[in-house]
Image 1 (cartoon, helix red, strand yellow):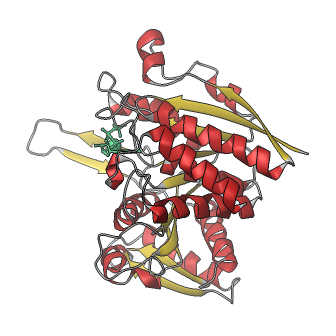
Image 2 (cartoon, rainbow, N blue to C red):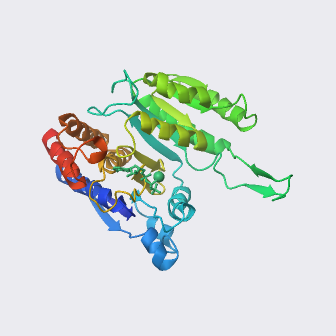
Image 3 (tube, rainbow, N blue to C red):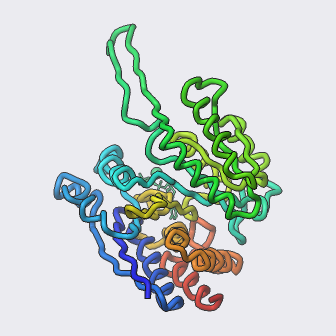
Amino acid sequence: MQFFSMAVIPGDGIGPEVTNEALKMIKKVEELHGGMKFYSEHFEWGCDYYLKNGRMMPENGLEILKDFDVILFGAVGAKTVPDYISVWELILPIRQKFQQYVNLRPIKLLRGMESPLRYKNHEDLDFVVIRENTEGEYFNSGGRVHEGTPYELAMQNSVFTRFGMERILNYAFTLAEKRKKKSLTAATKSNAINFTMPFWDELVKEISGNYPGIKTQLYHIDALAAYFVSRPEEFDVVVGSNLFGDILTDLGAAIVGGLGISPSGNINPERAYPSMFEPIHGSAPDIAGKGIANPIASIWSIGLMMDHLGHDHIGKLIVDSIEAVLVDGNIRTPDLGGTATTVEMGDAIISKMAQLA
Ligand code: ATP
Ligand code: MG
């Protein structure tokens, strides 16, 4: 029997509603697999906690989390708490402290879903974006001087380290080796950003030498964004810096049907620290408490968690079950044009999984 410890942070708004469905999926996985058991502990951290205690999580929050194998995260955010607090005091410290340097997002048009791109079907849209999650453009360094004068200026530094780039590129190449198309596309902008991006390009070329089976290409970010729309069938693994990856992942989510569907993993591949799995959407205060949020993104996050824990076949089974329910088409939440509740959608996926297993 394999035991895993899981910290659950449902958070705010629809976070707890969709997380509940993901937890039902964990139960089902334990039942179907037999050889896997999850020990889970819940933490009611987030904006309510902040309004009572003046912080998003307890002072020793990271200490508490550090020995878990995985973290299941819902969403945080509330109108009463500024975004910079909810994000900077909870999600970012977790990503940074636990060296979750891989932000992984599948860009896959599920069967039963339609892409807003005309003439594109699900075989055309099936790739993964790997975003560097710890350095690059989102590095807290810079300054602003001469405020309020005509000479006012702001500068922001990007930091690209050999260590940081090598580890994200090695992860991306290794992933490409496991996939069908055996191709890797790296986002760059070395024609205009003349210190960091040439260094990135050099490392892409250098490291590609260690992966002779992988077809490697470098595209400038502007062209690459356009190709996401005009020829997405070309892509397999796409890797980018923190900023470029951020933009590409949202664009990617949009071409495969959007927020309610898309999951993500914040991964520490060495498993020295916990990895965190979450839907990409936020707390959605406009629909919170109504029981109509789409739980697919959160349930699919469990699929990514299974891949990470070495149970890829279960990860695939979860995606197959979601697809089968979408293809059936009669149970859909309102964002997908139906009238089903969060619970009904979750139940449908879970009972489909029992059939397919
Ligand atoms: P936050 O500040 O926490 O990000 P937000 O107001 O930006 O909250 P998002 O969660 O980013 O809200 O969602 C943007 C829009 O997408 C909202 O209208 C929301 O209702 C919708 N949405 C997001 N997630 C889902 C979901 N799982 N199911 C249905 N609709 C969703
Ligand atoms: Mg949002």
